[in-house]
Length: 407
Ligand SMILES: [Zn+2]
Ligand SMILES: [Zn+2]
Image (tube, rainbow, N blue to C red; front, top):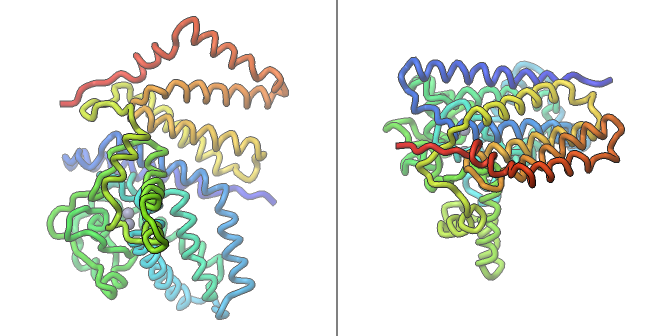
């Protein structure tokens, strides 16, 4: 029996809360909470993760069942007390998964993406990557291994995921008495800050007592400065996902001997050589536009993101009913579009090649659907002729990549 996926409703809910947060920020005269480029970038990363998650979530769940069925240590019944124990156990595992995410290069490479955003709002909560989801799953395996039933574990992870969404906002101020037990937006805001006293603090997801117990709790005092100590300064979709892996690889290449190489991969991000990133950015991101200019043609971006969200919602809902080739098409189309959005934000000159690739992909898909795949070359030939005749890439660059100077 095929299933309808109710997680599809998470998307409209996300945008509804985001809309409310945006309106409230305006009403409270705090427009600095939102930044156009950063919001687009955060949402793009969230869309990709939700999309890829559809393909791999089932194997995560199978893994929990496999561990539970064959290797569980205790037989734990499901009663109210056990649910209470599970909520504490999940937060304990979360604490260590999150702390190691900050203390070990290999894990930080995935988790750093969550911390790129220099804005702290609901869009920052969406900055989770598939790499992080995979690493997290590795940690969650402890729970079915102890003997918690996978259905309980999965339910609890949804509760945790929903809770952590609401801790990414500046609109709720400090609530001192609540901090004794719960992670509040102010407590998690401290975790996202780059100020010296706030670094490596507040790893808990729902509760603050693990942080208090292990000496990593810090309450908000001065207003935090959000983002990384060394900000990324790039909205490239791919670079944001992969830059730290490249940095680790570069450090590994520069190191000699087993100990140094081990440290490059499993050492502390605090010891990462800070010269590496600028060198790599020079190598991979050469044609970046001037930083004081921003994109004028924003609607094109909004339309693309809107379509991606819509596709993701419908796709999530009907995922189990689709053929594999439909799934691969949608995945490729959305990922290509997200790369396009990042390239637009960065005003990359090569972006029209991406537009052609996308058009070729769409036309090929529809020809395949209509059993006309042997004519796949026709649209491609038309595109090549059109480019030759009308210099479309020039027109594209002049219209879409128009810049305005920001004072
Ligand atoms: Zn973190
Ligand atoms: Zn966060």
